Image 1 (tube, rainbow, N blue to C red):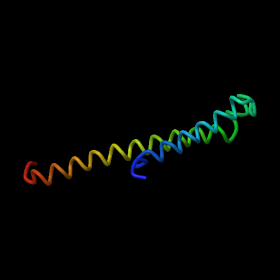
Image 2 (cartoon, rainbow, N blue to C red):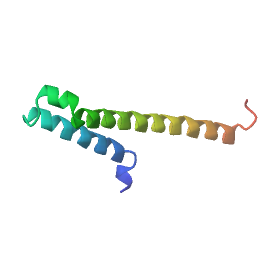
Image 3 (spheres, rainbow, N blue to C red):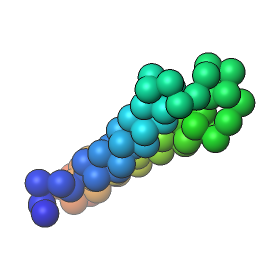
Image 4 (cartoon, one colour):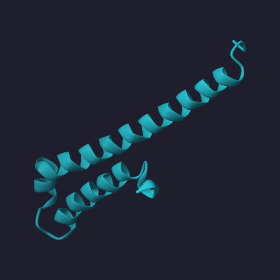
Length: 77
């Protein structure tokens, strides 16, 4: 399962987006029902989850670089 490291959240988000949009494309919902219903909330939740995961990844990357810098050059300011 190491190959899924860091990708599981993106997979879940993509599935959430697909299920929301399938309801619209398949004709189960009209555009007005889609915009006023639960599916648009699921769509925004998926986008928010993806954004959150990207932010966590970026923060982990910066923190790791900062730690390595202090390990190799502890007195370099």
